[in-house]
Amino acid sequence: MRRPMVAGNWKMHGTRASVAELIKGLAEQVLPSSVDVVVFPSCLHVDLVAEGLAGKSVSVGAQNCATQGREGALTGEVAASQLADAGCSFVLVGHSERRALVGESDEVVVLKFAAAQSLGLQPVLCVGETQAQREAGQTLAVVSKQLSAVIDALGVDVLAGAIIAYEPVWAIGTGLTASPLQAQEVHAAIRAQVAAKSPKVAGKVRILYGGSVKAASAAELFGMPDIDGGLVGGASLNADEFGAICRAAGS
Image (cartoon, rainbow, N blue to C red; front, side, top):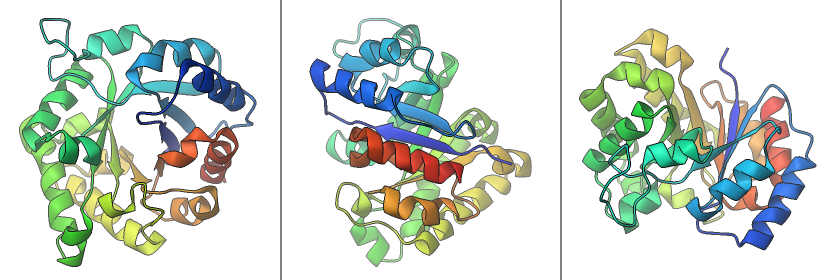
């Protein structure tokens, strides 16, 4: 039985004041003990969030890390070792916004995945297709290629210490959400791809759905057999909404 997870990606949002308010709201939520809950604040606020949620059943992750695992001469970047030192347990790698807007290739994603894991962080590997790719019938091929980049370079066993997040690019921040059946089809294909290399890893690896997840749609999405929780964007900035999504995962 895979333990559900709900992760909140705060993206480039938050001031010290608004983050403190959000932390306060999260601390007041009744979160199910059967669900792993993680939040991903901006790098500037990791310390604040880690301190504010100390003793709470909420882990902290980072939205990005350098391709180099340890400190060094890499101006503007943050090493996985620094993130671990700041209290992070997870890190997003390969998010579509970084692939599209910053130009991160599969090769860069692999380096970041390996760097994170080498320092004890759990990578959350983001995969997903654009609207044009879905309309062209390329969804499964695109997702498979992104996943294969990691498996081929590092071996399937690395996924035993990682999370996979399927985020259709066309559903991120648009209000559109893949139907539960659409999402399940891709999640099942991801699990089957991993199972072809290792049935044991495939049975254990958690695959989250991301893309305009709301409390109203969460229960039906999370009820699908291969959907193990959600990577939540905008809704994670509202403590009540995020808490409701977490409770949906626990039901």
